Length: 115
Image (cartoon, rainbow, N blue to C red):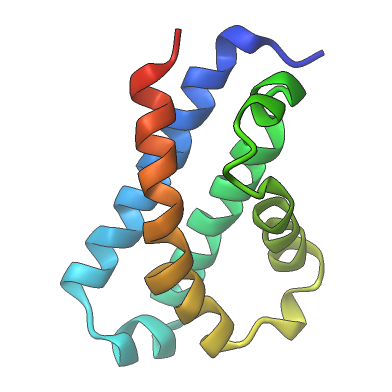
């Protein structure tokens, strides 16, 4: 059973993973991030953490926050873990440069307002 009391902790895990990704973007070029396997899979792992933490949020929390479509976030984690052979660099780059910054705005708000 998922505990509502742990939702704030899961939001913090998401924010931490986003911070790691942002630090990578600030430190390395696109070419370095996508062509260095260690860096590349470091990004993949952070996205997996985001998806897993989002999946572990209580259903009540996700139902209260319908402004976020949680399904693609969890689905992305599942692709990265189970169908990793089909990950494209373009898909990963769009995720970290476009999707995650938009998602971060919501997560910061939720984390701040958490009761």
